[in-house]
Picture 1 (spheres, one colour):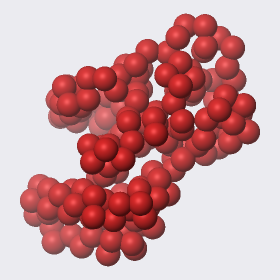
Picture 2 (cartoon, rainbow, N blue to C red):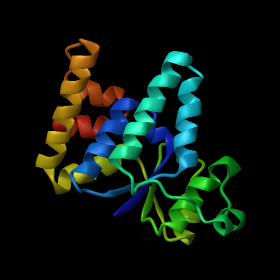
Picture 3 (cartoon, rainbow, N blue to C red):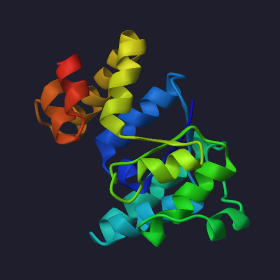
Picture 4 (cartoon, one colour):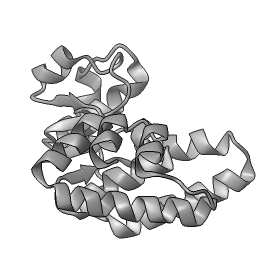
Length: 179
């Protein structure tokens, strides 16, 4: 399964780590564009210069770890496509250009299922998708989640539980399954 990951999924750290952990476990192939990464960078930069430096490092690591994931949108695709928010058309264009199976986003309103279906795409939310991966391969997803939990505890100094961490990361179904 080939999935274009929208900016809103890359920006929250725990969600991004869970999604990319599933990709690293071989559960799907991630796709994004330079523009999607640029949106992430601009969103974090609004929080100040410290965040901007951190996101630049995270994007560099992402690009080094997943060199095949960054893909351009074919210029002709963007001109012929429509979404309720024109600023999101580039995400759809990347999905069409790369023959992706789905777009992973939290932004359901701006990615109508009917419009995506016309292009042979599905819209999936991170929690539902990751829960589906857990149903298919519980051991792989449990290992990914444990690694993310361990890192969150180490970096924050807080005694997170799996369920609480994933709920805070907007992954409540997966949190219930793993908690």
